[in-house]
Length: 262
Image 1 (cartoon, helix red, strand yellow):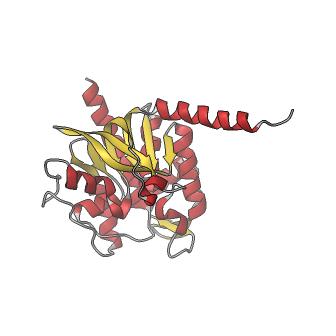
Image 2 (image 1 turned 180 degrees about the vertical axis):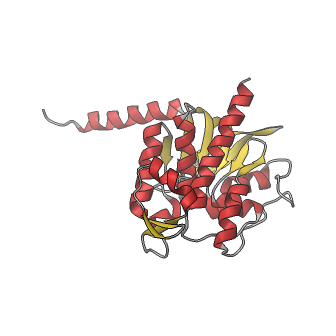
Image 3 (image 1 turned 90 degrees about the vertical axis):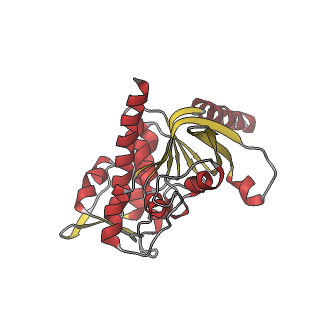
């Protein structure tokens, strides 16, 4: 049978339309497809929550692809090994409490795991604003990343979410939007983004988990975005805290969604 270009086009348009319309109203909207965002999405979707993940770049993965300075290996501490096992990521012990994994395998498995669990991933899309109401963040305002990059005057579209996660890493792009545009203060000591500090791996890994929490009504932070928001240091190419942060925020939001349903 001869392949028809119009049928190919129609298949892509109709299937994408189905996926998009199915995620216009969700339980959780995640901005940032790095390790913490993918892990959070996986665990939330696995429990039956509807999750949309927005990634501004062509590919998900954040900084994990490059390992450390383009040496495509990552380090994970022992406490995060169950998450590697959950996603089928192979690892080897380097020395006590230091385990290595191939960064390409790791992020590929995280992406596949999130998709297979039911996360709706939309790449090349930018969250340019939030949907707000007087008391809380209610969703995201979206546009194509190419539109943003070209500075075209194209109006965005919106999705509704019961909760939003900023997993954008160093940029803290959603928190920054809320800080600059939404009335009220962040739940930080200064009421604003505290800013990321210089590298201190041990302290950063601990604070990543501590700082994974709600920063504004309806908005949570995870991964490096949590440390940058609350003033923690960067950790470098060790990813256990990032993975555990994604798992923690998923647990927090599962509990919050259950409470709001009662």
